[in-house]
Amino acid sequence: MSRLAQFWDSDLAWSWRHSPVAVFATLMTLVLFVSAFGAPWIAPHNPFDLASVNLIDALLPPAWEQNGLSTYLLGTDSQGRDLFSSLMYGTRISLMIGFASVFLSMVVGIALGLIAGYAGGRIDAFIMRVADVQLSFPAILIALLIDGVARAAVPQNLLDVIAFPVLVGAIALAGWPQYARTVRGSTLVEKNKEYVQAAKVIGVSGPKIMFNHVLPNVLGPVLVLATVHLATAIITEATLSFLGVGVPPTSPSLGTLIRVGNDFLFSGEWWITIFPGLVLILLVLSVNLLGDWLRDALNPRLN
Image (cartoon, rainbow, N blue to C red; front, top):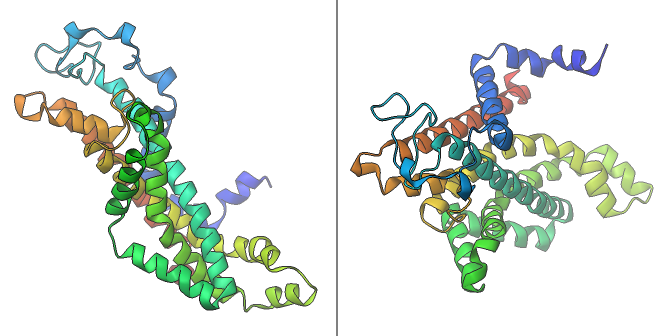
């Protein structure tokens, strides 16, 4: 039997097949991911190619509205860019920032959680107190602080260049305590089990025990947390971009598109901000639903 067939017959796949919410969330997530990362090939226009942008087509309504054109399915923005294509490219940027920040948070949080749980003592107390202090502040405030400090320390002409890495770093450093606390709790349980004691007896070093033996057994809850954290990272990025401290308008994310469209919302051009908002809602909702299902499916107490 192939691995694919074995997975299809597993308890996890059975749970997915019998959960309409999980099936819907998976399909919606796949559609958004494929349209986002396949934007250069799927999108009907390149909204960031100045040679293809025509100001005469600015502020056109969706195709089904009066004065709408079939060439622009969801209308255009104030610069004549196709909104449908902009949504694909904007979703890709939001997902790239989300994935990068979640990965960096996982690396930092897992490493500190393993050290805190395995070493114990003052090291554990210090790392956990730092995490507790950071958790007492909203993540958006931490991200704003880090972003503001980075922007103040960099020349103005380099702000657009460093916008992406600074945004990723700000969101990542605001989210690592959740991973650290989760990994620490699992490590405290695993380090007292027999396989860890046996590794100590035969002379295996502490770092090797942590990363070769303990780490594989604490990744389950971390993967579930990462799925939910992806939605949080996307929302944080959209919030920062809406406040004007995110990615530049030359390569806008969903948050930037919403901020730009907000200026035209009360003048009648509702589509410029409504459609990016709907895509953001669908993206976050589908990822959250998928994470909730995965958490329940991997919880042995509910099976």
